[in-house]
Amino acid sequence: MKIVLATKNPGKLREFLQLAGEAGSHWLDLVLVPGVFDPEETGSTFLDNAIIKAKAAAALTGEMAVADDSGLTVIALGGRPGVYSSRYSNGDEALGRARLLAELEQVGSECRDAAYVCSMAVASASGEILYSAEGRWSGRIGFEERGSNGFGFDPIFYMLDCNQTVAELPPERKNALSHRGQAWRQVLQFLEQSCQTG
Image (cartoon, rainbow, N blue to C red; front, side):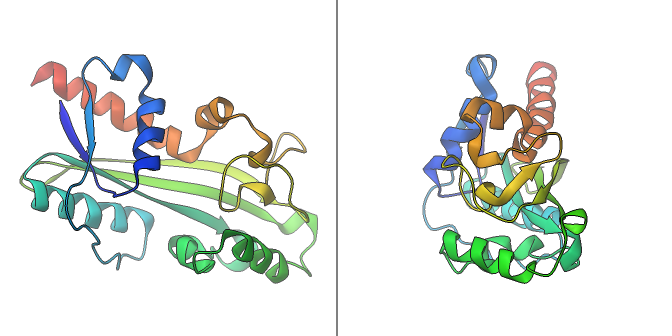
């Protein structure tokens, strides 16, 4: 089954293929969207933006498409940075982490709850949304950076059940727990069922 991944990022394609694993390799032909692709993400939620990108990729290619939108929500900041997570740092991840820590400087450890959220949408070749899914990874924002794996806010995102950041996890452990992994596994199940019944 050929599916267009609504991104130009080859790193994201590799991550999605890794998450699909050996089972997905037998039926899933996942490819990057070709050509110029930069739809305006005007949605107010992660799902809104995922739908915008999935429909745009389907319209561009005439193929079934899947898109994701994800980010960090912090309760003490009213859910920010939320859908603006990628723009929060202006392309400088270290600056983004420093900005977040500065915003939370006066916030105690009991009020630093946060969550990584990922929404995904699957669009048919004609642009109809066939399926959507959400993954949520709850944690808290720490007071210092730890770990060198991962990216974005991972070095300051501490897991709830241990004093460890996402950046301290090996990639396979992160994939098993992550918001993106949760949502993608739901989408994979839908796509595999569609492949079998189609």
